[in-house]
Amino acid sequence: MEFVPGPAVHRVLCADCGTPIVPNSANLCVACLRNTVDITEGIPKQSSVSFCRNCERFLSPPQSWTLARPESQELLAICLKRLKGLSKVRLTEAHFIWTEPHSKRLRVSLTIQKEVLTSTILEQIFEIEYLVQHGQCPDCTKLAAKNTWKALVQVRQKVSHKRTFLYLEQLILKHGTQKDTISVKEVRDGLDFFYSQRSHAIKMVEFLAGVVPVRSKGSEQLLSTDTHSGTANYKFTYSVEIVPVCKDDLVCIPPKQARQLSNISPLTICTRVGNSFQLLDPATLQSCEISAPVYWRTPFVSLATVTDLVEFTILDIEPSGAVRGKWVSADAQVAMSGAFKSHGSYGDQDTIMDHENSSVSTQIFHTRTHLGAILQPGDTALGYHLSNANFNSDDFSSLPSSRIPDIILVKKTYPNRRKKNKTRNWKLRSIAKEAGEEGETGAGRGVVGRMGGRDHKKVEEDYERFLQDLEEDPELRGTVNLYAAKDTKMRDATDGARKKGGQYGMDVDEVDTNNTTVVDEDEQNAEEEPDFPAVRLEELLEEFDEMTLGDSETP
Image 1 (tube, one colour):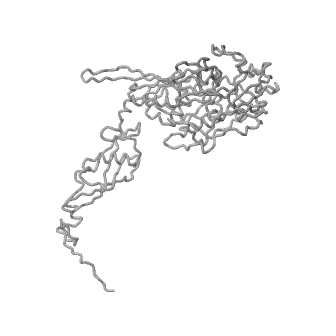
Image 2 (cartoon, rainbow, N blue to C red):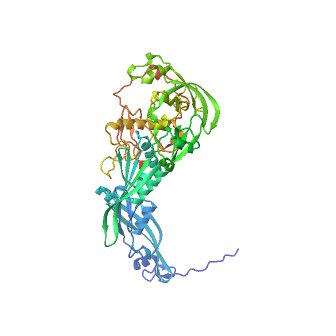
Image 3 (spheres, rainbow, N blue to C red):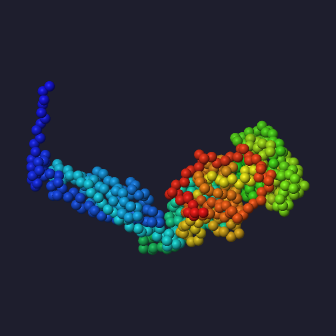
């Protein structure tokens, strides 16, 4: 095979240093060309970026503040915007060079190209150093100045417990609605949310209307006005009232409204609360859904709440055949919990409730319930004892006695599981901002229960009852975020102190080793319910550092 030589490469000498090079329009080598022409001229080699330490945001020119992580694409874009002469060259590559986090320096490597002579493109790599200047963004400046909020959302519910706001706090955290909040302040019947912009307050009102039945009303207050420019400064206040009907409450619908709602029985229980609430007649399984506008046209209140529930033991239960969804109608025979227990099993006669110490305690009641698919003989259920109740309600008094049952069962409970006092393997987050002036944040108690005083113990009991509802109701657990707890020790909220977490930390019950509780031997050896709906591991989320879920204090 004949060898064919390639075309000869003609070379010329560089005009400056005499090095043989491939001919080009400048007749200069790359080194001499860089010494002659500097394509980085006009681009500063040092610059600065503004960083707010309170909200951890960077200033994105000209006036916007952006949340950016170290060495992220967002931070790189902010750094490139600070360079003025970058528009005259072609940027081909840019990346960060690692620096110590505490050095307050950012180093960026740039690769640029530019045509220096006719058909001659020169590429050059150089570094730019940025000085991180700490300051305050306008939002944090207003926050530090105190009392600079522009919009206020007042959330109220006229009930005797705080379980609704404990649940609402978890919904707010799950959907991230608390990010725009300047401060949260607890008041007697609810919470106050402060915002720096009116749009953020309107967004919160719309969120509340989507998760709970509410009615809202807005008002504005004129602070100042400029007659020359025609501008005015206002403060906006939005009042949001939540329907005073909660899950598992006993409700007596006004007879006229009950006839409009498919002629349902007036005596019902609340089974679900969302942007509307659902009422169920346990005897017939007939249900109705009442929206917020329908409720506020003819409002009514609950006859009894979960604090009035009484424990009953199921002696016998037989399904009657009617089925609607997960509810199954059944005829049940029940008795008071501990009705047939010997009096010697009580540690102290003073602790026995009046209905347990009376002659009615050994009576067997017949009732119809909607829990036929859940309850079995020997189970324990919570219900309302209407034969011993006295309600201050004209609607309830107008009902004929034949339509009022002696017992209304509401839900199944697990007393043996509670007596074991087992450690929970999960925990919750909380909006833990310090009480006091608006704008103060810290590692304090959650947003509900900061007022202290006489109601503190009651709030702790509501919090423990809320945790029990999460354990026993899988549907309720699906609406909130549960996080895995590693070394968390939790017990009844009425016995111990609360340990504080971070800003979004979980307030965890701390076991007091000095107090010992005497437990009955029969209760200690009681067999745990096998169908207890325990929280599974796949339902838990892992905690991350940015969530500050870890305990800030070491035991």
